[in-house]
Amino acid sequence: MKFIIDDKIPYIKGALEPFGEVVYLSGAKTTAEIVRDADALVTRTRTKCNESVLKGSTVKFIATATIGFDHIDTNYCAETGIQWTNAPGCNSKSVEQYIASTLFVLAEKHNFELNGKTIGVVGVGQVGSKVARFCEIIGMKVLLNDPPRARIEGPEKFVNLKEIQEQSDFITIHVPLNMEGEDATFHLADKNFFANLPKKPFVINSCRGEIIDSTAAKSALANQSINGLILDCWENEPDIDLELLAACDIATPHIAGYSKDGKANGTSMSIQAISKFFGLGIDNWTAPNIELPEQTKIRLDGFKCTEEQILAQAILSTYDIRHDDAALRANTKDFEKLRGDYPVRREFPVFTIETENVPQSTIEKLTQIGFQINTK
Image (cartoon, rainbow, N blue to C red):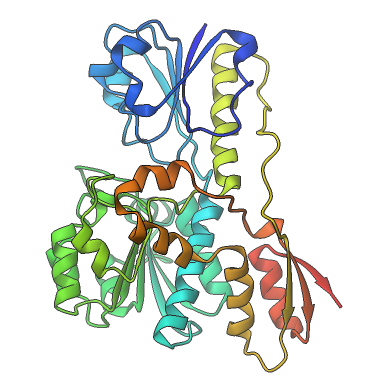
């Protein structure tokens, strides 16, 4: 067997070598000629798996180590019998951490408290659900919008997009990119969307760049229809709109889901899927030797601190989004390099918090968020 693997997928080397030839290539070099005699592809979002690449090949299975799969032409795969899989939820905790850092940085920058503010979560899948839960833990009012789930589960716990627009202080979007149909999300945030935001919310996009109309977003910022824009995903990546970047409150190079934990999960799910499809016998394979940050212990002294200050210190000790924002602004031409060389980021459960003068109610919230606690 022959496996073609994106060379930016971590922890995967050695997993498939016992079962055949393994070729590691960048997504840009994964061409029709390269995949012609391959049995399986392991990809990321930068590899377009469509007819022009797959036609005439021996590819039987595609695994993308990502949540999103809009880079796979699923209709063509269905027509030609090529099976495929993605990694749903693999980096959901990483995106939760990204949104948590975003919220506390915005609160500090603009001098407000998050407790009591309203956040609209558009798309309540594995990512949006975790974001919503986190926001509830820290005392925010959460509105949920997810038309496909509302149709299946009933409308009781969901609101429509108009209510999100009217009531939210923050709107965070976590939907797949659907170009057409009842649940089309291409340019979901368009000129009309931005024109109907009476509370002038902060808008956050960490799912797909095409969800937001860049021209409409720039107009909304110029007209002060919104208080700020936070973008991790961009139209036309990696050739992003530098005018839009300059206007953003926070701008990052599509790394919301780039914790080492999220990447390891995506790799593990891909190898497990390939094993099951080809009968390789490594159905429980997991990524080995995930790097740790230099410091996994956080000391919190809550003396004369509000609960929100304590929570902010804990969250930002694990990940401060301002570093990624500064890196992109300083290296706008290195969008892909910033992604490819992304530093070690680990999720909340890796960290142990040593607390002093921290109320039990706050400790309980830190535990719910996922931290390990060591109380003095």
